[in-house]
Image (tube, rainbow, N blue to C red; front, side):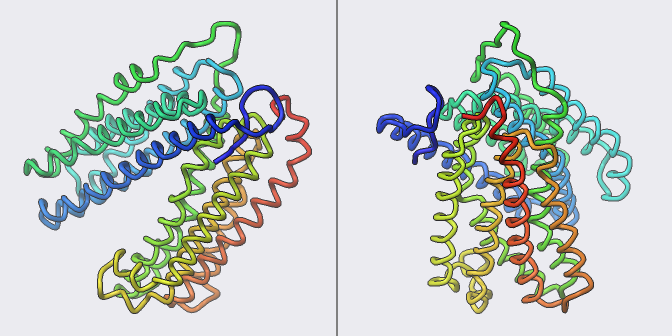
Length: 412
C-alpha cells in the first residue's frame, strides 16, 4: 500500500520499509475499527436479552441520540488531522473542548423534549450529555495522532475510545443494572476517555507561531461527515417509512451488505488523509484505486455468494434475496469512493464539500416518495442511483476545484 511520501517534496515512491510500516499501521487501524463496530453491535444485542421491550426501545433511542450527537467528534478528528498534517504541533485543545461542550449542551437543551417524546427518565438524557461530551472530545486526540501519522498509536487510541465508549454499557447490561444503571455505568467509564487519550497522545504543542485550528474548519468537516452518514443511511429510513413491515425488515438486512462495502476500505482514507492535506495527488489516485479494488472484490463475492451473504446478515429466512446482494454491495462501494473524494476536498480546504451529498439526499427523498412505486426493488434502485449521482457530482466538484488546489501553498 503506497500512499505517497510525506517529506522531501513531490509524490515519490515510498521505500519498501516504509510500505511495510504503513501496511502494519493499516492492519492495526482496521482491527481497531472492527473492534469498535463489534462493541457497538454488542450493546443492542445484550439489551435485547437483558431488558424488557419498553426499556429496549428506550435503549435504542439513547443509542440513536448518542450516535447523532457523536458525529461532530468524527468531524473534529478529520479537521484536527488535516490541520496537524499542514502545521505540525499546532494547538487543537481549545476547539476540541469547545466542540464537546456544544454537543453536550445541545443534548442538555433537548433533555425536556427527549424525556417527554421518548418517554425517558430525565436522568438518562442528563447522563447522555456528559457521555456525549467525553466521546466527542476524543476526536481532538485521535486527530492529532492521525495528522502526525502516528498510526499505531491511533489504532490504540481507537481501541481506548471503543472500550470506554461501550464497555460501561456492556458491563451494566450484563450486571442487570437496567437502562438507567447501564447508562450511568457507561457514562462513568466514558469519563476515562479524555485522561487516557491525553496520556497516550502526549503531544508537544508548537509554540513557534503556528495558528490553531479554526471553528470554520471544524464546522466544514462536521458538515461533510454528517452529510456522508445521512446520504448513506437515507434509503434505510425511506424503506422503514414507505415499505410494509416485512419488506422493510428485509431491506434492513440488505443494507448490512451496503454498510460492509462502505466501511471495509475506510482504513485507506484514514491513512491517506494526512497526505491529502498536503496536496498529494498521487495519494488520492492510489486511495481511489485501492477503494475501487476493494469494492469490486466485494461486489464480485456477493454476486457469487449472495444467498450466503444474506444468510450471514439476517438468517436463513432471507437467503431467497441473495440475487439482490450485488446491488446492495455496489451501493456501498460507490459511497466508499464518494467518501474518499469528500475527505480529499475537506483536506484541500473546499468551502462546501458536503453540497453534492445534501443535494443527492434531497433527490433521493423526492424520487422515492413521489416518483417511483413504493416497492423493495424501487427503493433499492433509487439507492444505487443516488450513490452513482453522488459520486458523479462529487467528482465534478473536485475537478472544478483542481486548479485552485494546485495553487494552494500546501500542494506538492
